[in-house]
Length: 172
Length: 284
Image 1: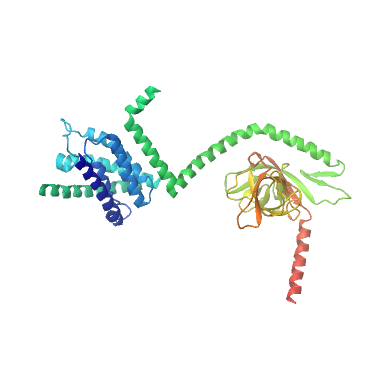
Image 2 (image 1 turned 90 degrees about the vertical axis):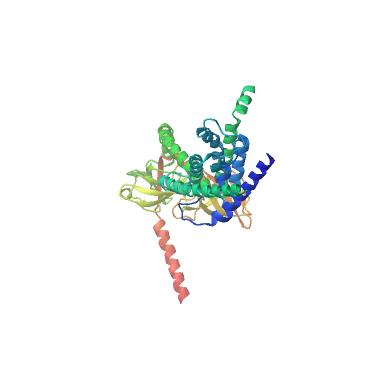
């Protein structure tokens, strides 16, 4: 239990650092802005209490906001996917429910399950984030394109990161 | 009450979510310049539109008021002018008096378009060059100044309202005559204007009357502008900045008077002459 918490705190710090030190500095044009850090919310254990889910979403978002100078935007998107996560998990739950002690990752539940689960969360996150950023509907389709392309990039990064972790576990 | 708490406790996930999300949106609107500006602007656009619509409706209810005011004013003016001396041409009123020579003529006009919510507001009146209106004439109502004629067509003229960033009216404090320019600053609303450059030795009180000064070629002297609402001496400034509550209600304008200064050309010519003479002597 303690080790799970510690592991998640370390993951939090690592993901924030990777996001603000590396990904923030990669220029991929105006349309592609991946946000790998939400992997933290995606991969939290199933039995995380709901309030903790919301609070960690908020904390994660506000931390990223501090580095991006976008006070509140990432926090709003983070809280939103933290809120929506249990519903999505219910939607995709296997017939016999989730096994205790597992995490929503490729390792435990396979690629198709993970792609649909994380894909939805990522799209919702990017949707909230980008529309909050432009704050008007006049550029609706332009922003929608940004959401789509950035979501793809984030999903790709998330999957790659998952495989990196998985390999490490198998080695252990 | 207990049930309410139970309800909130049962749905704490939803309420915590709403709480955090509201906090986030608040942060977004508070701390990000663009969101703040557009949030405030869009709410302003909505309120301005609603105000304009209600204004249109309200005008009908104000008609009675406006008519009564006009009747009162007509009676007042009739009492002031001696019937035998006044000759009315069109509806321009002139006074033939042998003791006092006439300096101003007044033409009544109706406001056909008005705005108060822009940075630069203009009015349109139903009198034009056919009625003898020229640009730069003053426009007043019985309650105070309105603006200055800008462009003139055959039957209409546009008036640069006092509520315009480019309007400057030479005005003075009635009780001691110290004068300064009156402008409509960015932070003024439709009933407030700002009087600049009033020296700090003047003993101002809120409620002091501000009128037009005699130095203006367009406005007659002692036309009411408004009353002092507040005044401050900005740090590093040697003058008071005075906020003036305008006596004219720009939202209710319906009938105005266009003032023609008959002696304006004469005065201008004379001033020009002495200026050019001055230049000549200087060059010599």
